[in-house]
Image (cartoon, rainbow, N blue to C red; front, side, top):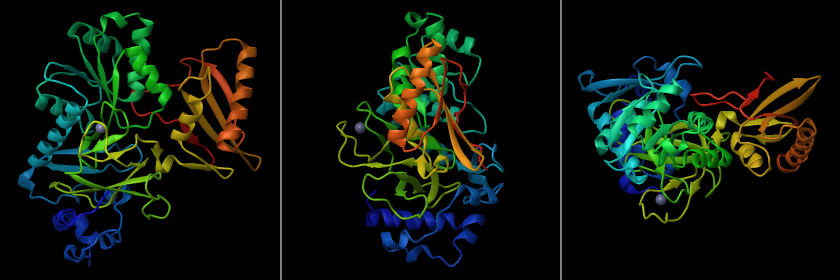
Length: 411
Ligand code: ZN
């Protein structure tokens, strides 16, 4: 995004504040915030990565006085030591204000009934959806994840109008509602889908089966949580709340800024976070900047819906494979659903890409033909020959959490 003198001043202030934490005291040793006088100076600063934040466990990121801290959140610890983020009262309030702005951008009003399925607890998801909706003045239904029977019963009985969920859980609910023929008794009109890369086909299915308008909401625990940006009714990318953060899009391999509109990794610097400010934090989310004004008239710049994670980008026989690319490919093939799984194996000195996909076709012959079509189209579009396997609808795993679709079993 554009760098102004005002922004540079804000960044210097945020850096000076960050240096009150044990982590940045060491990390920025010898680096003086006053010396950051231009965009060039700023872009020479080292990136902060998740690995470094893990080393700050448990409270090394804390940059405010203990008496100011009112809450902590933590990113999932499934891949190692979790990252702990302390929040001051102002951080919690700022986050709720940003989230309220998300609901307003999506056209949610105080007369809506907001059904929240993301988890509550150390993770930031549920509570973020909750506080933003309460600040807006809507009726919230804090379900949390799981228990699909109860979810659907409450949705019916309380007349939920807005569903907040991950895309995979929204799909699961949509399929259940369809299966039980309850569509007429469900009053949903909008759905806010938490930051996750998801394809056009899945989007169309959820929208059609639930009869809702879909919005992509963006965020990550390290930077407040979900709610730092959202798509608008024009559905042409997500507006980011740049009064609270500065963003860059970089080449994940070289760290250099990408050209206008090019795909790269989103990097965020917080401008007014007190508990745990972050400077040049690598989100690992792949996206691109969308130039020009949005027809909605919002003054906030846009990034594209996420197309994958920079660490999900895998190289197979010289071709770059990432989920967004596969989604886009499958969306163009008739009789193939949005659900797929890729397993990459190394056998007898060769890489093999197994592509499992769901199809409504049942006949063995039909499936064989479809596999042949997918194999040829994949080779043409992606550049390598896969081993496709068609399976029935609903056969691939669905989850309430973010689903992984590319499994690299080579290492
Ligand atoms: Zn817009």
